[in-house]
Image (cartoon, rainbow, N blue to C red):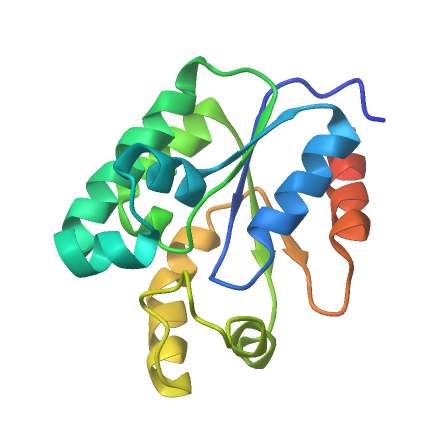
Length: 168
């Protein structure tokens, strides 16, 4: 277990990259709390992410997301799995960089698409071309992360150990 790093860790990346599963594994590895931003938004709003997009629209969802993210400011030693579009608002990126370390979980588009097949919690899931365009739009935000970690073909526990090692 890593005992040298103390601070918040924000996992960023495109849908399907493994933020939630790696986040849970990393929180266990470091004995940190875990917050899934989408789950927190669903809890607060009483609707799924897809339902929020459908009933309130994406701008309303992004406001809820920014609010839930800001509420992590008073937390210590927490792993936060952000949403795939959290960094579409630059103030979110700036907040993350001020309040912890940002780690980009990445995988090739074909792997991300395969992982997202069900689409139940992914309201922006579309055709491969649409997904490629969306990923391209979001890359500048992801590239602002301190580290990029490849997730394709790896278990959440192995990825968590790599991140914990980098933090040490």
